[in-house]
Amino acid sequence: MPLPSMTSSQPMNCHLMKTTKNLFFESDCILTLGDGNFTFSRYLYQSFKCKIIATDVVDNHKSNSLIKDNREYLIDNGHNVYLGVDATKLEEYPLLMCRNDISYIIFNFPHVLTKKMKIGLNRQLLKEFFESAQRFIGDKSIKVMVSLCSGQSGVNDIEETDRKWSDSWQLPEMATNGNFVIIDYNDFIEKR
Ligand SMILES: C[S@@+](CC[C@H](N)C(=O)[O-])C[C@H]1O[C@@H](n2cnc3c(N)ncnc32)[C@H](O)[C@@H]1O
Image 1 (cartoon, rainbow, N blue to C red):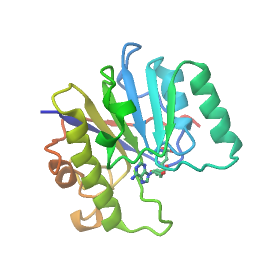
Image 2 (cartoon, rainbow, N blue to C red):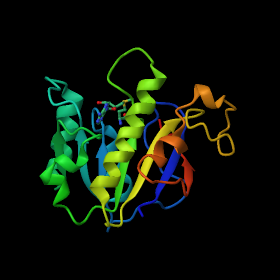
Image 3 (cartoon, rainbow, N blue to C red):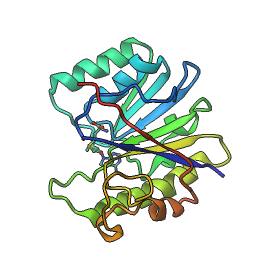
C-alpha cells in the first residue's frame, strides 16, 4: 500500500527550502502537482538535482513571464512540464501513467481555484487527490507529500498552531479516502 508523508510548512510564499533532512536524491523523480508558476519545481531541482515532472491544472497561463521563464528553465534542463493536469484525475493522463521512474508525488500548498477561502472545497480537493493518487500509484512504490500552511493539517501533535479539527483541512481523514496514512512530516525552512 502506498504511504504518504506530510510536509507541514510555514508561510505560503516562502521560497524553497533546504529541509532539515536530506529528503531527495539525484536518483529521485518527483511529480509536482498544482505548481502554479513552477517556482517550487525549479527550486526543487536546484536544491536536490533530482528529475522533475512539473504540472499545474491551469493550462492558459497567458503571458506571465515568471511562468514562462521557469517553464523554459525546467525544459532546458531536461525536465517535463505539463499544463492542464488535474490532481484529482491523475490516472487519466497516459503521459504520467506510463512513467515508471516516479518516486514522489508532491502537492505543494493545494488550494482550489476559487479566491474565497472555502475549507470544505479544499478538503474535497484533498480527498479526491488522495483517491486519484491511489488509482495512479497502484502497486508502484511512490510516496506522496502534501505541503500545508501551519495549522491547516488538523494534526495538533505535530502542529505549532493549536487549531480546532473542524477548522482544519482534516488531512489524515482525507488521506484515508485513498488508503493513505501519514508516516512522517517535515518543516520547511524559509529561504527568502
Ligand atoms: C496556493 S497555490 C500553490 C501553488 C504552488 N504549488 C506553490 O507552492 O507556489 C494552489 C495551486 O493549486 C492548484 N490547483 C487547484 N486545483 C487543482 C487541481 N484540481 N489539480 C491540480 N492543481 C490544482 C492551483 O492551480 C494552484 O497552482
